[in-house]
Amino acid sequence: MKNKADIVIIGAGISGCSIAYNLAKRGAKNIVVLEKSFICSGSTGACGAGFRMQWGTEMNCRMSKFSTEFFENANDILEYDGDIELRQSGYLMIADTEKELAQFRKNIEVQHACGIPSRMVSLEEAKEIVPHLNTDILSGAAYCAKDGFLNPHKTTDAFYKAAKRLGVEFYTFTEVTGIKVENGRIAGVETNKGNIETRIVVNAANGWSQGLAKLVGVELPLYSERHQILVTEPVEPMQDPMVMAFNLNLYVQQTPHGSFIMGRSDAGEPRDLRRTSSWHFLEEMAKTIDKVLPAIGKLRVVRQWAGLYNMSPDRQPIYDKVEGVEGFYVACGFSGHGFMFGPVTGTVMAEMILGLEPTIDASRLRLSRFAEGNLFTEPSVV
Amino acid sequence: MDENTIICRCSDVTLKDIRELIAQGYVTYDEIKRLTRIGMGPCQGKTCGQLVLREIANATGQNIADLSFHNIRPPVVGVKLHLIAEEAEKHEE
Ligand SMILES: Cc1cc2nc3c(=O)[nH]c(=O)nc-3n(C[C@H](O)[C@H](O)[C@H](O)COP(=O)(O)OP(=O)(O)OC[C@H]3O[C@@H](n4cnc5c(N)ncnc54)[C@H](O)[C@@H]3O)c2cc1C
Ligand code: FES
Image (cartoon, rainbow over all chains, first blue to last red):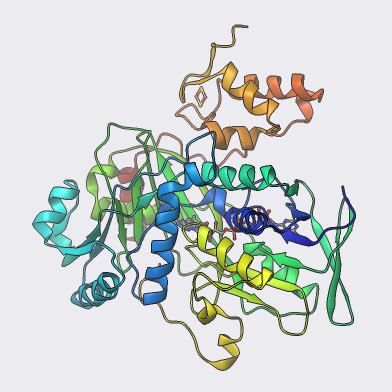
């Protein structure tokens, strides 16, 4: 392992790999990415693979549009020898209360102002889009045909390989155990495989990021929480879009090879780093799917797993440098939607670190917003 | 063995696919699984898992017994969702 680097990135999920690629693409040299396990072993590898532009705030609409346009061309831009398996088969957002439906209408105005092709759909049309949907319990739906999903392992692999070609070095199974600060400035990192001198550290460790920040005496207002997901046996294609509901609390998609992947949030989750699977989730998930999409209830469960949401007080990420520790950057707190923002994360962080003119104004996502009481409230998060 | 031999029948992955990934430096079962879907089919790797581990062991000179296989997760395999829902509702009554 080399013992000196210009920039050290901690974590090789979608965020770390995208930041590394974006830095190298803009000419930064001598970049090292440290990953305690294998590439994409964290939340990215456990995620639901969905991306959507149906947000309720202008900034999230703009950021998700940027990401979507990137994903549409990612195989070419990243010169990937594989396929990120992008499928723009839509997101159908379903509401079972008038209040939620009214929120959808408001969101769509914001989306239209950003050029996002979403629209309200009647229950009849929702049933045409997803024939097995139980519309009896619904009040309405919104739909965007350009939303969809893509393979998180392949997408991360594409960024990883592109970054490697540009000279970035990745050390896997290398855990950061300490961060050295001298005179208020980052001086290096300590790992289980040796030390690296550096003046810039990027904390892209998601669920583990608040623990890492503590190593330099910084308290990030974040906690981690397990989120679970399950997959069924594969069947013939029967559902194009992701079906998502905030109030009914579910998301479910049929993957390209036929199995259904579904998840929901659990209110009683402990705030820690556990990633085990529970019966409780399985039961609640089964009840929800049986009610909303009964045909899927007939399928057999094949596997269940869990990953971490890194939760911030307003369920929005933090993109910033940390005051008081010169050279320490954070890109974390993605809550439940850091995969789809990967291209934005890399762009924003690389431009911030290199002092370049920002392509996307993400200053609303600064760390100090919490202390200022200036939270960024997005109405449409799971 | 012929390189076109299918190693994972559930996910249609050949020996060649596995060897190419190993040659690119993906030498953990988990990485190979995630990039190829090997071991993710209805049999959950009962057929293909050992074959992949053997390829990794051969390529890296490690002992097959030292290689880690994916986590065996809860015993939900093969149960229909609506039956789980029915059971759960019964317990609540
Ligand atoms: C069940 C579930 C479903 C989800 N569904 C979606 C979805 O549909 N769409 C979406 O956009 N998002 C979704 N998310 C959220 C998304 O997965 C995350 O926000 C995103 O993957 C975060 O990426 P990351 O690279 O920041 O973090 P991670 O992928 O977690 O990467 C962080 C990495 O840091 C490494 N690390 C930690 N500590 C250290 C250390 N000390 N030294 C070295 N390395 C270290 C970890 O091993 C890990 O690989 C979901 C999450 C879960 C759990
Ligand atoms: S043969 Fe590979 S998962 Fe069944």
